[in-house]
Amino acid sequence: MNDQGETDRRETPADGAEPTTTHAAWGAGHPRLLISSEQERLVHELHEDRLLIGSSTECALQLPGTDSVHATIVHDERDEYVLTLHGEGEMNANPDAAATHPGDRSETLRTGAQFTAGPWRLVFTREEFADHGRPYGGREGGELSDQPLQPPRPDYTGRG
Image (cartoon, rainbow, N blue to C red; front, side, top):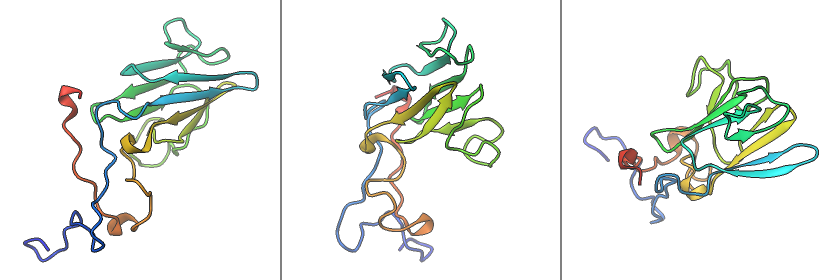
């Protein structure tokens, strides 16, 4: 218990297991996009901090049949990959919902997040140990207020 008589959610669980974390070194976990259309399958490794996706020659990931700049993925200061969909397409997040990126068609990508651009389906994947989402085991151990917090994020200002 803390000074206010409340249970500290970061305490070691009664079973003695140490809390897990999904915080890892900057850019860890082999982040990449699995890309498919009816005819092709591609993999794009995410090494850049800003990736333009579209049909323009200025895009690092050029996909025929998309808008000139159809989407952007930014590797942000929290070591998250954030998608902004500029052109038509579907994404996991409801762009009308008040979420982590209100007012735009953006979402923080988690392993398995999918979006479309023209005839292409793109799936983000990153090893679980570095995905910053729910710690190993997902919902196991509770939901929302019952789920133990992860330790604070590392300071990524030094990028590593």
